[in-house]
Image (cartoon, rainbow, N blue to C red; front, top):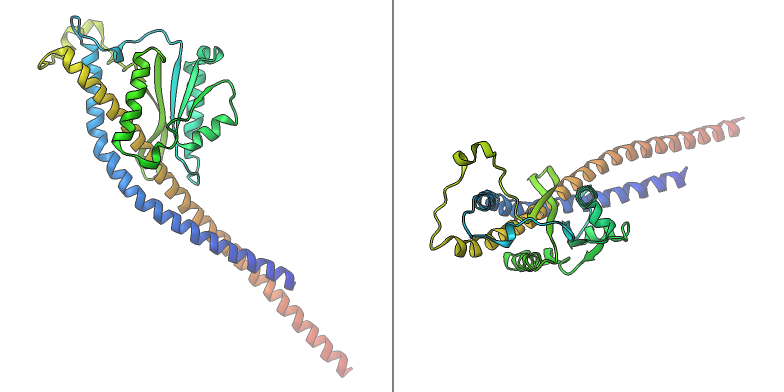
Length: 298
């Protein structure tokens, strides 16, 4: 019985230590979440409005003005950018993004995958860890896997420019981004966003003349497109990283909060077991004393 009490005491001590760690991690994630949440909530309205404007512009181009970023072509080589975190302990956050990426590849690029023409670019180590253990028929690019180590616009825009050059040069015919969309601290969900070519706003031919956007370009349409389109695409790429960054901390804070609650429930159960075992031990000792005393009197 003494051995049993010692084992329970050690388990209680271990759970308490684990609970202290999860509490600390929850507080750290909460502090990081506030900063990350402010960044994405301030950028999202601006980025979304620019993205809608870009889609409208490319859907209503007239004359000879054009940009290679809006031209759809037959997809022979596809690139899927998978944005995850570098660290775990965030519940199912990374797993959900990875599963969404796999489902997207199987649904949209099944033929290209059979031909060995699908490349997966990883931003964040958890995506690469997931794919490399499971799929050997995909091409992997880990050049920017540590981008989250210094998440600033200059770094993300450099990656975006490189991908845009590869798309314009014909290396890839389509580029999609799979990332974690941040809604609030408790809700994050995987999202697939077609990045290149730029999706155009669907227009009903019957009402095309009525709904066509009337943009005035200064100094000229082509010159503005060459400057505006890359800038919006870079901003959109950076937004997906900020979304995932905030989602990671929200998911980790939620996971650590749940782990802390589970530790508390486990402590209650262990303490009840300890008290029962201790009571049984005391009762047994008393019975032995009483039995010994009775034997002496007899």
